[in-house]
Length: 467
Image (cartoon, rainbow, N blue to C red; front, side, top):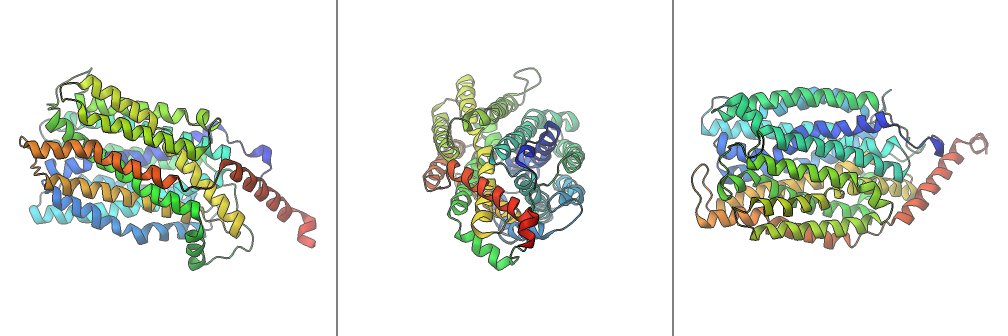
């Protein structure tokens, strides 16, 4: 264990860690924004079938995520517990993301089967690299304050990747595919695959693991789950993760549909080389980054959970206001959504910093450090939230009568607008209600951090070892 003066990480290591989430978001954000559109309007699968696929495929994560967390917690290598997976899984991760958009010549049944297989495998490889990546933050420094800074770098990287996706995917698809959207997506995703592989390798090279597990800790998967389920702060974050990502998925899954069918964006240049949809996505991604950059300023002045509650509630209010904006009032639409994104920006680093706090709490109370299992279980909650959101998007589009590539009925347009505004906002409000039960205050975390520091110093003392 390093001394307290060594807790501060260098800029290159913080940046290297942040690039890992840029790599993740080359796929994650593409899936959130474009995958439902790609499957319905390009690959030719019905919205209801896509919704079912999203929901059922992600149920495998109920087993896959915690198992990956437990596996990484038990991994021993010269590179640590979590870093090796960034090296080993980068190529399978990149390759499978490309194959999802390869668009082979198949009949209707073949296309649906191909989508099921590639999507399910992609989610498995995503878990295999992102669970260890997320857990890595908790062992790079024992300092809660430093982890909050590290989380800010992570999400600047994440939303930087989201910015590139928002700004570049539609122009790249048009450039590489012209009138053939499928070819455009195929080439674009090949580029993203190579970039994501290289970035994960950079993260592996620049980061280090410093927090070691307690000696003679009790290693039992059953015991680990028993501990996990007994930790109230973790349970709150688990439920909140489901609700938060369901809200995100509901809105982002229909963004392209919202602009294509409600705003009637025809893809022509609106600003520079960007169409209205791309400009909207770009501005929102920029304001998310600005929000992330404010995280350290805010956490130095306010309690983390209090901040999270207020920011989530206000973001939900502004998201709801978009329902009342007519399709020809693009400027008003942009301002309201940008404010919602600015408010949402700090919430992601706040949540991941709180996961690190929960890992400290678990080690302090149960003498068992489970970064991998804690992060994997929370990632499962988030992915299950995405599953609920994406599945509901497909099912509700079908319920409201959506048919791809034709003018929509008034009922279908109402459904698209609700999915873009009030429905995700309602999930955000539920999230706020759940967060009211989070009891691990920043002062408590500080006391836990100091207690763990003293415990590790005592364990490292020669006198302690001979006593």
